[in-house]
Image 1 (spheres, rainbow, N blue to C red):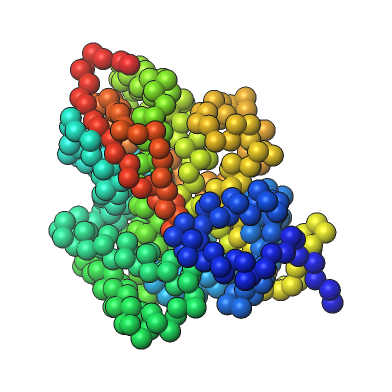
Image 2 (cartoon, rainbow, N blue to C red; image 1 turned 90 degrees about the horizontal axis):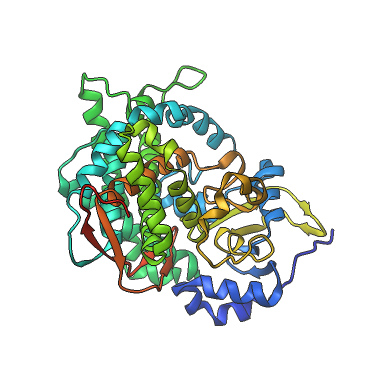
Amino acid sequence: MKYYYPNKISFLKFLLKSTHIAKNPLPYHRKWFDEVGDTFSLKSPFYGHIILTRDADIAKHILQKNHKIYHKSKIQTKYLSKYVGYGLLTSSGDYWLKQRRLIQPAFHKEKINNLVGIINDTIEEQVASIPIGKMVELYPLMNELAFEVVAKSLFNFSAEKQTLKRLQFIIEKLQLFIIKELRLPYQKVWYILSGQVRYHMKLVKESRAIILEIIEQRRQSKAIHDDLLDMLLNAEYEDGSKMTNAQLIDEILILFVAGHETTANALTFTLKLLAVNQKELRQVSDEIHSVHQNDVSSSLLLSKLNYTKCCVKESLRLYPPAWITDRMNIQDDNIGSYRLKKGTIIGTSIYELHRNKKYWSHPEQFMPERFFEENRKSILPYYMPFGAGPRLCIGNNFAMYEMMLTLNAILSKFHIETDTDRIETNPLITLKPVNVNLKFTKRRKSEGS
């Protein structure tokens, strides 16, 4: 049977640029998309047939229309899961569906509404410690804030700072090494011989021990917390069985990894974009000031900050934390004029899709008005910051609540300014901001914009 692949490029050409790809693949992807088209393919001796696309129709085909035959590729189910566990992010097929059904109820809007008080208190505590009157690196502040929110609101976990810092350190180290393994697979033998694999697997063991301690502490507690951890411990499958300790660790570790870092990234990019775009910053500040004057409660706050929400969504368009997503077909498939062999990996660049001139006017500009209600229908098919289809990010509502509450807490108290308009990124497993410095100056109580 003949197979037809889009715009084939030579793997040798690709390999010659491998050092640049390993450092930052985004400019290189942009180069090929601009030169060859919105979809191209190559055949790798390590991963087989690979397609990279920024085409919305292909994205919708693999994520929605024909999602049943497109599973997570071995890049996630094998290589990534080795380090961060076989949880919702890295599992596929029937096992993923079973876990999703078990965990989904904890992320319903009603449940998140019940957590707003804890989330807001944690945010306020973190915002109170922001250094004032000097340029500070923003990402570490947002990273710590987001980690504390996940730890306290989802797991009611208040371990010693040293334990939380250690878990953050391990997650960061593992992510950097996973990227090295994936982008430079021909150095695998060296990673083994040099002891790098052994060192990082030791970190995996340590991270799992930390999570196990959280589980055991909760099991010994008589208190009812009504949080995600309680739900995970008590959740039952159809046959009445519960998750094993290994399964619990997998899911909790994934939620710690995905639940704090993506939000930290998004908050850093959003605050930076607002600091660069002063007109939009004034509008957000005025909206927040107006809401505070009317003494709106935390639970109603989110429905009132409409322009602020548009700014968050536009930031997620320009800098989606999950900047690329991949799938692999478990049987032959046709997509338009292409005939794809079973086992083809398709990478959808959400970053490029969100900046594709075919779908967006002035795609590189920060324009929150794109997300006004009257424009919603025209952009929705091309907007996928949390993925699409059945595997839409389970924590998307939680993330939006957290980001909105954080912006409210910061911009009701501070003016923000930055030292440069330039925005740098580092596309690891998530899209990370680099060298973002902001200056926070206290507002007067009566002050609006």
